[in-house]
Image (cartoon, rainbow, N blue to C red; front, side, top):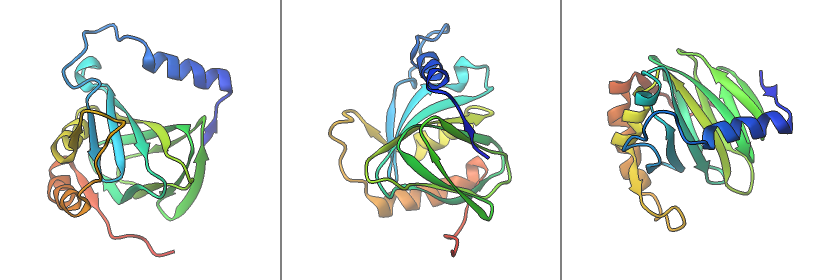
Length: 178
């Protein structure tokens, strides 16, 4: 189920994320990596939240997203800032647009795809923090200039994701029929 926020509530959330944290900036905060079709920017890291959560911002190319998987160690919430995503949650599918969010508890099969024709953008919150930070850092390709991101070597990235995922409690699944 998605919760719809008003424009003002959305702006308040975005403003909170974009403000300077009360704790010192970490070396990882603001770092960008490319993972498959995602450009991921670390916004709030687990060392700033005593390990409670991590927030990243992701930009997803049209048609891009994540394949079906289960997270055994952390829950995940997605807050769409721009564009439209189609989420698969278990055996259900839901379309989510700007100002809406999806919560995925641990042990839930899920996937998402940018279903629009333009890049889409969202915040991803993982709890507890740190697990996905380490995963993204291990499998992602560092990006220095977001305006000039080279094409991803999908074969190499898929191999890295499949090899690393189990270490972080992530079980990658084959695409669902439907």
